[in-house]
Length: 277
Image 1 (cartoon, rainbow, N blue to C red):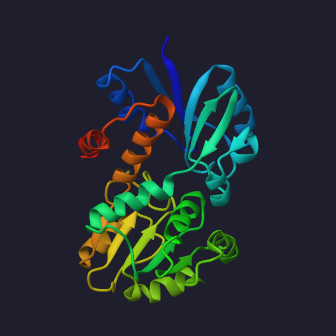
Image 2: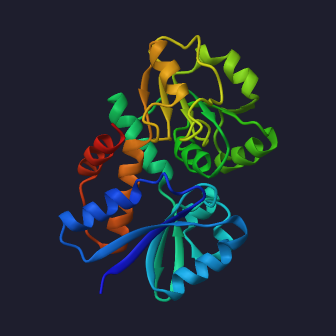
């Protein structure tokens, strides 16, 4: 009998995780199947209980449930608890245990694409303060000399996010209007919200018109492959990165966590690029 894995979210029809996960199982001779589940907000607790009842051995968590899922899990890894967000759940000894490596996957993708081994004194803008932003900010706050501005529509939520990096000396909360005005100060801009995701591809959290020379702009969205903010950034001379590599790394790490078997995230990248082209 195949082992069952999945992903929950809302919306979820756009997710390419089932494609790359099931292809990885097939290529590596694994008897497993991955399914996407659309869950309504009010049904989240019931959905988690149902997944356990039908024997799903692990599942990924995406928008808008990365923080909301925590009360319905049996245990949460200490780092995921600090990040206040879960993106992967594993069934262990009858319990659903939550983990989070959003930030690690994004950071690895960033460093690879920038050709760096680490960060030093970069000035970074994070757009958004949701579950993905929490994990990314936590990862970035480990670099004590980087300067981080967090801009969000609700500044109170950004203030809450700042508490995750309590020992970080250089974190400021600013408005989206200030972020747009100051965009030429940033070495790295990372867009962590769902704004610009298919099908609302004409939306962007801010206009890119006057970037710093050599700036790097990252958007964790992968569908479309080039969001409005990335298109503007590219046209204004920035190096850009979408969420494909982060997605591939997340899926590869999930499979390894659930099955103990390593798979190629590069092969997943090839499938994503082919599908989105």
